[in-house]
Image (tube, rainbow, N blue to C red; front, side, top):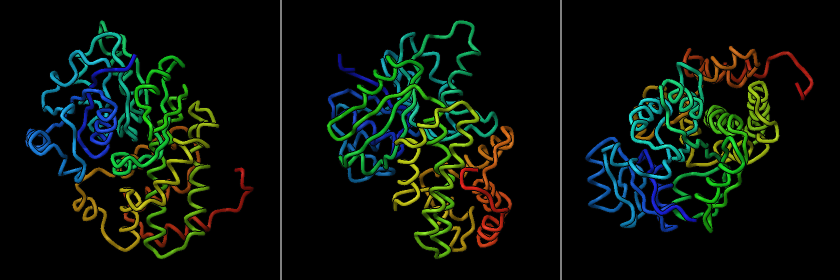
Amino acid sequence: MPVEHAAVIGAGSWGTALAKLLSDKGCRITLWAHRREQVEEILSERENLTYLPGFKLYENITATADIREAVSGQPVVVMVVPSHGYRDVFRLLLPYLSSGTHVISAVKGIENDTLMTMDQVMEDELSRLESPPELHLGVLAGPSFAKEVAAGVPTAVSVAAKTKEEAVFFQEFFNAPLFRVYACTDLIGLELGGALKNIVAIAAGISDGLGYGTNTRAALITRGLAEISRLGIAMGADPITFSGLSGLGDLVLTCTGDLSRNRSVGLKLGQGKNLSTILSEMNMVAEGVMTTRSAWNLASKMGVEMPILEQVYQVLYKDKPCNEAVRDLLARTLKPEQW
């Protein structure tokens, strides 16, 4: 039976695109934004002029800044807030969720302090309650620029949940004529693939900004996938996941697409711009910047070698010149490819 109404938490470009996708299927959507002026803009203009201009939102999308109003009684809650604010927002809405609610994260990041993925953050918050509601948690990932999804460009993504039945629920919830959804139970694999590809995209952008060619970009994508797989396998992910949509698919998109915010950050770094200046000029979050710090700490904790991550970390947080990072990356000891 189709879901008739749901909440989307986060009115950035991706949250708005998912709200539009679901409303186009006939689902009544309550879209939560943390700023009242943005809510008023959406309601009056029927468009998110700040984050996703040019796409009209049907009347079956309403907007609110009241978290209780957004989620109370909703059978499905789609979380689309930046990773650094994910825990705080989930903690705010948790008291208003009933047992049986399906909550899915469409966020690609790793929490800085705890090194947890978003699914792990939700599990952690639930474990702190004396009588937590029984929620069905899931993750959505894959190659999906918000603007193209909103425009109806054919897209394929993956969803994951603990059980096959829960994964199939999310699969059917999101699947649409031009938005094909695959299902699996590898939660950690989907989340790590979605989060770590942003770091490789920064590296690919740096390469492009330095004026290197497609040879370099192809090498970064391939060896970046090897790094992502190494960390993922160390954390219990299914290796096959990384050859799928949330692994290779999302990695290729983010490293090559002009709509990639993370590639754009790297591109400007390679051209000599300062990181703080780059970020101040952006009105949307480039998750890869904060995720680089989380992933660097996570790789160190797990004892996993990730040379591309190491050099991106040095550029972002230690002010290492981009050309020196490339030199040091290429000067490492030679080894067999599978290593």
